[in-house]
Length: 344
Ligand SMILES: C[S@@+](CC[C@H](N)C(=O)[O-])C[C@H]1O[C@@H](n2cnc3c(N)ncnc32)[C@H](O)[C@@H]1O
Image: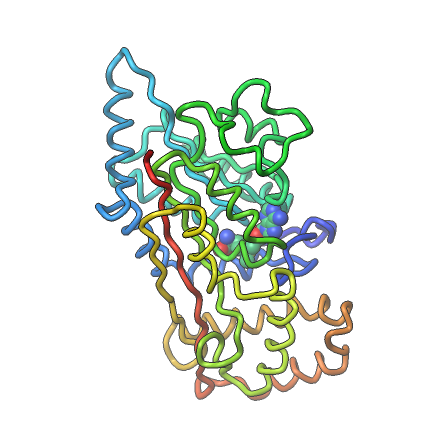
């Protein structure tokens, strides 16, 4: 999906690595690159390890009886961009007979107004059969209870929604059955200042037994993170990653599991996904293209921040244009983190 070039720049205000620019086309490419990874993640989440499919089946069965009205299954894509993951998930759940719109809410939240509008348009035009998908423009660094749409979706206790709301207070605000069954945050936490605080907030928004998934890049320019497919990319990504890391002071991907552990989460799993960048494979070529798009898209921001000069940026683009070939090969590493909130 493409983005609107007239979008005001401040809508990406807290999207640090993406910068104040339009990133929709790149995110569509990235979605394809990461599809095998999130297929693996979703199988773990739905399957016996985390049991989301069983949980959904229970709610679907309860909804068939006429006495009990079960709390809906709620799934949040935090930082959903143009909503590609939720489209994918909805299709998967439908094919497995795990989707009853009456008792399910699939909610995407993003602060980028244009991305949210694109996602919403898609649902109402191209995908009219999926009205249970909702996309909401909201800044994830602000309490959800301040957003009327999110407040009604989440079942927040009456009287707990005034403007004195603090993140710490969100615990205990949810009605029984309120909150999310699954929170998915793909390539988002690393872009948010004070990620630890926000991950805690998301965790508190889970129902007991709810599952949280985070994926973030390993922001090192070496074999543990990005092994550059061309040496000219090393200084660029070193500076860009340094800048991204500054907002949290560390690699969010490497510490998210410890933060979740401190919150009392159980079944914490973390595992890498290593994607080739360059070479002859289709995924390698897509990742190489993704890296070039990252350079192109983030360059104006790095120049504005005086992290790089315009001349350096132009020289890099010219060199990449001349020298990138299938002989260039490196890799990009991200870490997946999965955890569950205890039932009791
Ligand atoms: C790297 S993109 C990932 C998008 C999508 N999850 C994916 O994997 O394709 C980061 C997304 O987080 C969103 N984002 C960044 N900071 C945000 C914030 N404070 N509140 C809401 N969304 C935010 C950006 O607008 C962007 O869509």
